[in-house]
Image (cartoon, rainbow, N blue to C red; front, side, top):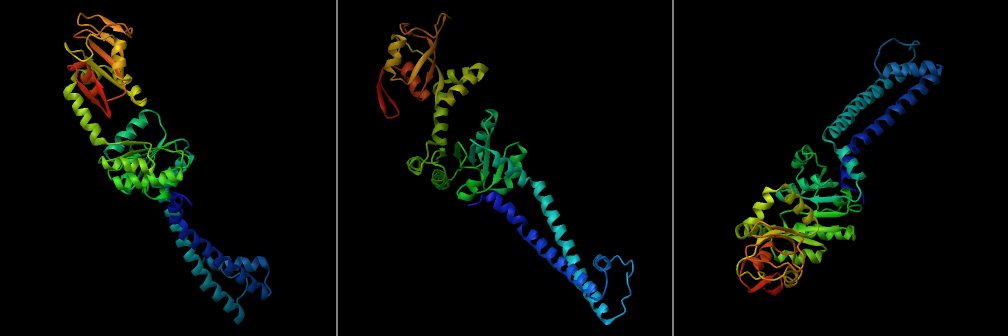
Length: 365
């Protein structure tokens, strides 16, 4: 199956090119036939061909030999009618072809498709809504090679204006995915605000490239299992992420403020996020679930959801990479690297010992 980009760009010119070839064949037949007809009357090839060219291009330099017989009158008349008609048609189709080529160059169809064809081990982003825009910005900042597949042709110009490689196409169409180089791609992220479309794209992408890593967006929790069954490797529920982020800001403002104010911490958090980890800063409450335990005991009790990278005492003493035997004292501010929700991990330190839910696991803290 040919890629949709090639089919569309080829189809755009297929009719003018086909017409051009047909008209050139027609004009060639007229030239050959007229030249042969003049030579049949005893003219040399050079005189006959010259006379035909003068007639076709309507230059009007005059006859190279007298047209003094009924036969020559008929040949000349036929050459004028058929030849001039052919030249008019040829001029028209040439204008059409050149105009089409200029339009294609103007809109960058061939250039964009050529760049996409050169991509390998790249990322395909289906959709350029709010999440698609943020994703493209982060991918660009990270130096990743990617192409955006957007089903709204009106957005393509804006996307390219931002410096991103893009093509118009519907991700639910296998031809569009092939044109985006899905067979050579490393990751596909389908982030449309349409769960049905994301499921269909996931199915198509998995069928076209079994080794592809697929990250899919889901709007409602019930879609998560469908996306996994369709072949997604990871499913992101933006509404849940947003709700958790708001909860973090409300319950643990220390972490948010520290990361916002410190560029090195922001950079560290971005690096950890790539590994599926997050950064958290919590304070050990007087009767908190981890207060009084050693760092090693707290990490074991947390079931591997976090590990302590720094402890700042209430006195101002800072202990970087504290030993497992260091005790967690009331008022200590701890910097953690976490695998789970910052809200859940923070609750282990900041609330009294109780049963805490961590996803599907119940922890006693």
